[in-house]
Length: 125
Image (cartoon, rainbow, N blue to C red):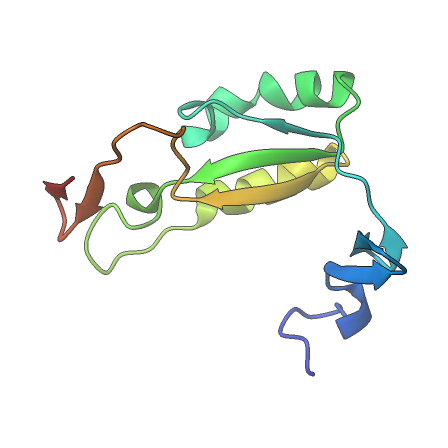
């Protein structure tokens, strides 16, 4: 398998490994226990919102943060893609020694009706 990320070998890609009757998350060739926090839905919508959050995550001794991803922040205009917000989050997480788990499009609690956005502005239930 060829890595598509420069400088990242196949062995460095995080993966699950079965050891006896246990499954471990392996990150950088070592078992990794997630000590994670999850951001509120609107917290990660701008870099400015996150400025005060990074130090608090670090102060809580977390090693991972779950961040919702909203497509409308990536493609605010049809066929114009901007990943700069999420690139900034990756750089800031690295600077604070944190891993990120991106929650694609965010998530909803059980029992909540989710509105799905499609075709640039039309909503369906």
